[in-house]
Amino acid sequence: MRILIIESCEKVLKEKVNSSIVHVRNSILLRDSLGIDLVSHVSEIDEAMKHQYDAIICAYASPYMKYDSYLTLLDNNPNAKLYWLVNDHDVEDNILLRKWILKYNKPFHMICNNPREGYRGWILRKILNEKTLNDWIDEWHTVNLNVLIFNEEEFKKPIRNKKDIIYYGTFRKHRIDDLLKYNNINYHLSSSKKNHDKFSEAGVTARFIDRLQWEDLEEDLFGFDGVYLKDYKYSLYVEDKHTHDNYAFMANRFYECVMSNTILFYDSNCQQTIKKSGYNISPFQIVNDGVELKHKLNLIDSDSDMYKTILEIQQSNVKIIKKERKNLLATFKEILS
Image 1 (tube, one colour):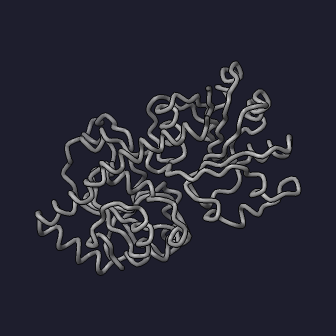
Image 2: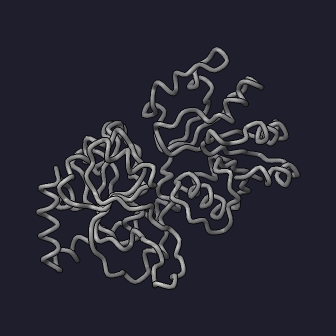
Image 3: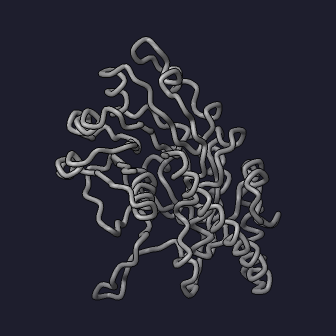
């Protein structure tokens, strides 16, 4: 069985890519874990055209993607089963698959973190060829794509000297109300520079820094090799309001912090997600606002035994995560076959 992923980043993806874009990292991990072919730049289309595929996975589809060029791959594989791969409840329809529907009037299938009823209703109600997008999606497979990111080798590395607390990620308007509660803790906020103004305009007060590094870099002449999550002692976990009532597994940052030995503190609005996840999380790690978080940070910073205890509770999830990741890859293969 031969499988192809069509990514949407318009960059040739080598073996190691320093990317903070989740769907790009997921595509690379699936390629490497399951031996799947991957096309992410138009220059790679000709090589892929030499093969016949049993399944083609379309991961997102950016506004800059050259859809017509990639559509030739779908034209070349009329019997392939088509899938949309998405790990976010808020992504509008994949435009490559939209073109497929408009051209062939055929459905496709979904592989997603969210169940069908947990996806944004207004997106699924969009009209294509006189049907809703929901009508064009045949099979819907709900799986935990976020666990893909966990890297046991990264977890096993010696723990660095850590300090400070960080929140990282793109600007999400539906997280701002929760994030505003932590304006008093003077945390680092890592995001692309274009997002710094968006956070500031929304009233968020933080020490803004550029995006984190995810692959080890060589030191420069001044001994600087980038800023990593593993440099931070703590991180803050908030989620979209939609996710409070629509379970979609723990976010990528949970797995990233576990493997980086960075202790997470969770906003109390995430408690339903925490409960349903089945992971070991101490009640000490759940906070209502910045005042409570600041108090707990002071407590744990002044008590090395308490810090060690909380870290060990978080580390106890590694065994569960490894099993879950293994099961995900097996399930993924089963879906495609």
